[in-house]
Image 1: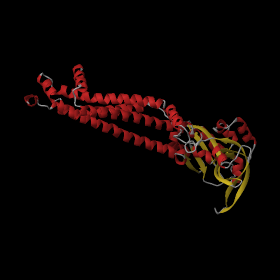
Image 2 (image 1 turned 45 degrees about the vertical axis):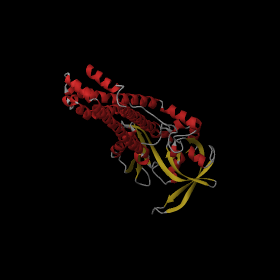
Image 3 (image 1 turned 180 degrees about the horizontal axis):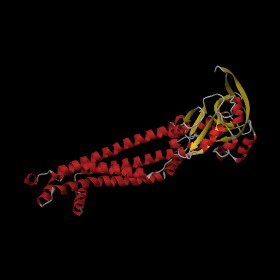
Image 4 (image 1 turned 90 degrees about the horizontal axis):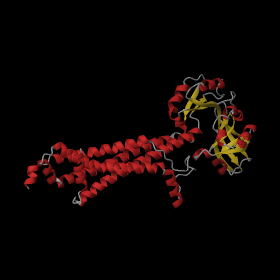
Length: 411
């Protein structure tokens, strides 16, 4: 192996080597490195989005909802909640009533999805953590109080303490529409949920919401969160089939899962596209080695004439080509790891330098470029790049072993 390494390094670093071969060799190294760097960086960004989705958005929205199929709501909903709380995968349960209507302030109107909460359950949920203590206490003591997303407040030019009117559609027994019901509510707090959620979300007391919707049982449905939100689809069905009430089942992947699905789609596209970039770079390894073999035929013939066998020649040229892949892979992986670890700071510096913003908090649930380095992504990238680099050396190395020393030295 020492002899193989010495010969491979000499062939690679020979100053008399054709300049075009050197250029192709350097471009293959650069291509492999660039592919590894971009693949690690983009996978870290996808991991960052997925982590922020889990830590921010999925800590606010319910992971599963069970809504009664009947207009009067769920019978014995307290017993159902006690049953759900006993499940080991459930971390939080609460009853709710959904109210959809139009908020009106002066001549401005905005659609809103109001969720009626039972305070004895909501007190242990996420809402007290994202509003101030004063606002939460005011909400608890005011049955006509509402907490609205900041986007709604801005769109309607509202402030905490203002009165606002909500228009609620009313259905008759034959499901035809009649004149909407009007309620006057007081804004007692505001929340920042991120993205579009802040533009159409609000919270009110469940008793008032049930009254406006003619829900006699008190709760329209039950919503909950799991210890692992990305398993919500299977857990929702598993738990829902055990309920005594007849309910419609829904989970966050149906109502708010478009972003998660986009992340998974982009991750798959990134894997395929950048693996092809690395593969194209490895074709340059094939090209440079084929030209190197043609140029080094006399050296190969002399090595064979002094006793080198075909196996040695093959390993020498495989080592020479693999060196390009190793150098490119290591450089790209190191740069990818460094940029992934400090991407948030780097993106913030670029935003401040050029006065641009990569992500808008009005559209997305975050306003910065996230990154989370997963070492298994690094290992997989290095493995793919090294594997393709080694495969690219096989054909030129075998061609080198087929050089006929008598024919070459005879000329």
